[in-house]
Image (cartoon, rainbow, N blue to C red; front, side):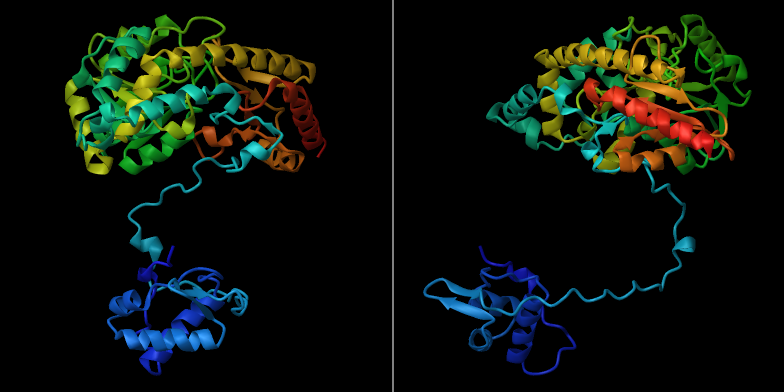
Length: 489
């Protein structure tokens, strides 16, 4: 295959004849390593047409480069970079980027660029990855997902694959959500009340953008899902953080002037607390008094291997003030980025319009593949398999934590995939996290989950979804030793 002719350009300020400029252009490409030995150059006709020159000029340049061993000619095949061409020169030091723009003034707002601190992209090479929300190949049904993906590529589904739905979604996926996913949470809805999103975080962003403005106040839990604070900052709204307790968000602590309340009642992030039914009803009552809306992130409800999950907050909502956020990414794999919003039709209409302006809709092939995977029962089978393996890992981890005297601050009543931990006062778990990296141990320090200028530094989260049971005990031992060393100074 030829080197694309579009990659060749003559410098507007180049010196010398056109033939010399062509020679210099190709020689520089070889010496820089961009053009590699054995690669085929464009034909003299194509390069001449592209550069707007005569073919003889290009041919003469090629001939001169061949004479200097930069190129070699093959009968009826054209010109190639010679195997005897000079070695690429050492990479030159790049000049510093131009600083003609004051970006501190040019940017309308500063957005947090550290999405998940402390989670390296190569986390899988660490022997003890106690990190949350990553895909463990042992837990995923790759075979059936691949078959569903192939089925979704078939002629029957060509329309679903290629159509621009504009602001609509795959009807088969929406139907499954309506007839299977939502009824499991006690929710009944119509197609006009469902919007497919690029994961739960995208759903929360859409809700925040539609519902909030600088004149409104959002209420979040403390501690809470870290990206939520960044999402709300982008709206310019006031944010009030309410401390959670063992039952989650306390309704009586809500500020009087509350417009939108963000909560994770089924599995509080990160403490794992589950909000009792009586408190859920009280929260709805308090929201009604304030004429506030509630955004419910139904966090990890599928992982209910200890006891059945409580009905969703939205299932108790008689006013239509709860916006429900669900996701398939946690059970399938995080890179899927497929979630959904459920809410009253006027809200969904606006969220749909906003999504259409930003990204139209999630890719049709992904939606149809997921629809097949769900409809054929593979999703439920995966939940069952994951629940069994996570229950085993949880038991092993809980025993290891108790053996080493590590304090569990929150563990969930129905399952989940992590423990919320608390180290002794004075221990900085971010320093402990960094100390553990050379030992192959990954943990999440907890300060980023808290709101306020002085968040506690002695919390951390240990997930067991990404680490095999056989490695948990040794990993926990290393964590305990690192905490002891931090205490000793």
